[in-house]
Length: 76
Image 1 (cartoon, rainbow, N blue to C red):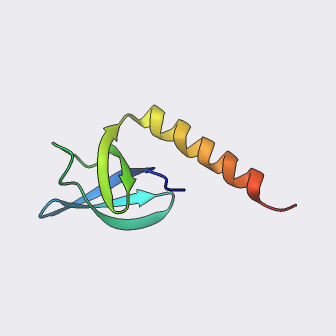
Image 2 (spheres, rainbow, N blue to C red; image 1 turned 30 degrees about the vertical axis):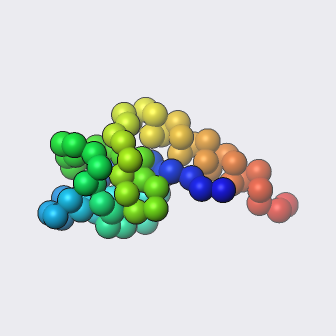
């Protein structure tokens, strides 16, 4: 299964790249597919590419659901 994960843009690197925070993990991704990305924006990331911009509320809701799903799969 493939997932697209919300991430917050922390730094614009130039050449269509940005550094994002993905739940405490810093990663360089391409933002070439999304127009006018700014520091602080939330984007949906799949295989190293930002696919779209989302608002903070949607990002937090999605991250909470992913944490909940991960907790259900953890053996007790």
